[in-house]
Length: 162
Image (cartoon, rainbow, N blue to C red):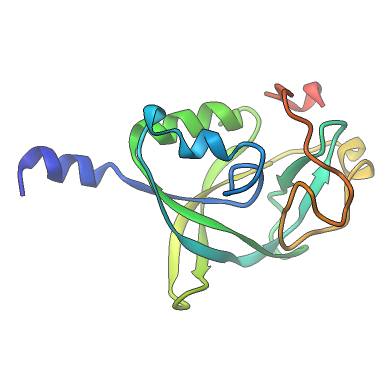
């Protein structure tokens, strides 16, 4: 294996997505676009810890609130991404000023193993956000029974944008 290949492999990261970046969801193209970096779907899983996953704001955005022990274990998808794709995801999620990327333990559905992956969580929120929110979810689907489809085109980079 060449040094260049080893260096490239060392820069790969695991990212767990639970919302609009999942396959079949409104922003899946951000993850799938190979022009903006490499991604490889690893499988589905769920967070080891429970968190509040809500849909809130006038844009019906899915938020995972950084409040461990409340809510449910969250279902999502695990991807291996390169540095370029991670930078694109950071920009898309407004890290670190809006969402914050942090490591979390994820249990894989296909074999029960636990991996550590990056997840984008909302570190702070206003009471208004919670008042406009759905019930706590385990799985996000834009067209789910909550009747709150995601509204494309929002550009939220801070809580004041909601």
